[in-house]
Image (cartoon, rainbow, N blue to C red; front, side, top):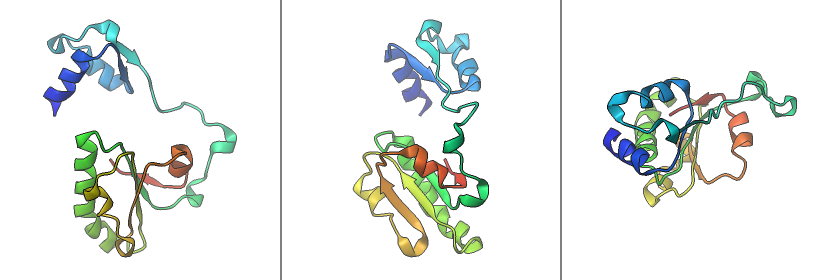
Length: 138
């Protein structure tokens, strides 16, 4: 929730902010966050190494990623599992690959090859896993 996020920010020594929109929001005086705590850390590269590119035609499927010690990531996968049959009804060959450290038993139990819902858990090379997929679901 927003309150938990803000509480975590106030307790932290630094906060890595991944987008300019989020940075602008966090700098609002109403949040009372010390500006020196906020460090821009964009996770999206402006350029990609040539050997790391994969064309759209070479990619397939959907992907979701997030560590499962963060409750919103668990909620996200629960929602995806509920709506996946509707997506699959329109795209019968579609597959969703779920990556993230510390999957709970509940998350692991959602794995269903017949439905194309694959829970992989932790992955060593997330770049490689993402380069194989066409659509990121969050």
